[in-house]
Length: 148
Image (tube, rainbow, N blue to C red):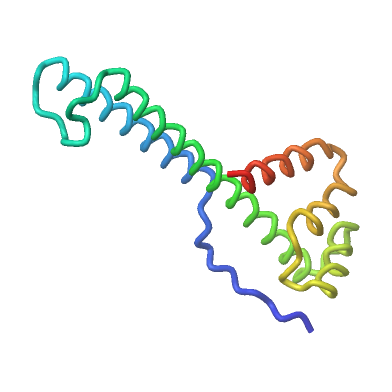
């Protein structure tokens, strides 16, 4: 008998992640404009910006935008991984009859919930999906995540 994992439903959707990215990016852009406008108009600025040139402020915000991009990449990859892992387990629990589901059940007998995403789950998908370039691209994204 397969002991089922309970899904919390707490994983973020890609839409939620993208909304957060846009709100955060727009907020950073507005804050940058406010700081530059304050400096240009000889108004007070937060202490961390005192003495900075406009180029230094631009570099400062570019670093923050880059970091925001990295965080969003992590979130998107985590959401995709959660989706793939949930799909793996649901196919096992439903006992679907297609080839991928059968291989997932065999994998589950060996590895259970500890099946590795790249080496196990994606390998099965890669074997049975006609557009295998997608799996290769996703593996490349996982390598990017490991690099970050």
